[in-house]
Length: 289
Ligand code: SAM
Image (tube, rainbow, N blue to C red; front, side):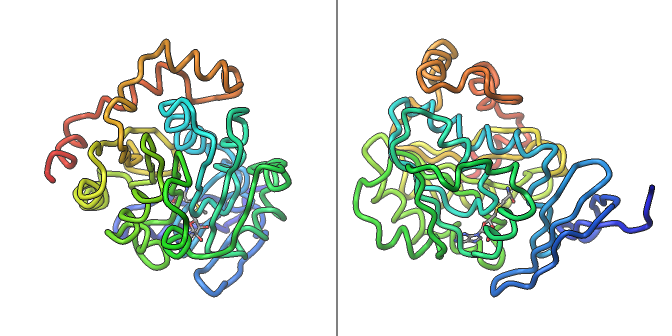
């Protein structure tokens, strides 16, 4: 039955998307943000934070697979992973699919996002929450990286909200300086870097900033239907310039060894390799630095 209840995304004042809602599952004001979880006619269950679409059951696989498998397989020997944000648990689940991973620490500032995701979005995380290799911490990512020991992690995955509100600190010099310190010599950090068709500043400004702490800064693209505006960019900052150029054959062999082949709906070794070929309208924001 069609209802006249719609959720309108508020990310861009003059352009957006809306979902027809069949049921409101949760609407909570936490200490950090407004959290909404809704059943929709077209995209399964969706999470909205401060009016911005964070994740939908229907297309979350695109984002989680590419934010996780690309850095881990590019590194090739990643055992200790730090995840910041990602309160829905989707990144944690993909990280733990890698049999080569020994420890995955997830630092999410808002415990309410975790609680509501466990209750209303259980398919996103699956049984990742109880995996013996997982350590889930409720806290601010900026504080965690400040206190973490040197060379403690091989990969850092930042799955945060945009650089407004609580997410803003995850796009700062202090944050990237500490990321560089707590990464191992071949370590790298990836982060959601917005949709450059509408948020070019996010890619340009953070790439300039990351260059002060990492010798190799670039980005790769993914197509997430509900992150409107065309390609989303995932920022890439690595200590080893070769990681973003690993060949398709090497990626496939590593995926085989890690147990990833055949588990994905978007990532493939060819998509992984091709994602670093940026259209000029995006590449120019990286060169701007
Ligand atoms: N995939 C989504 C996107 O690209 O916009 C992000 C989803 S995830 C739900 C974003 C998470 O980042 C939220 O749960 C939010 O609470 C968390 N977050 C924001 N700022 C944070 C911080 N400083 N430290 C840790 N987590 C943070």
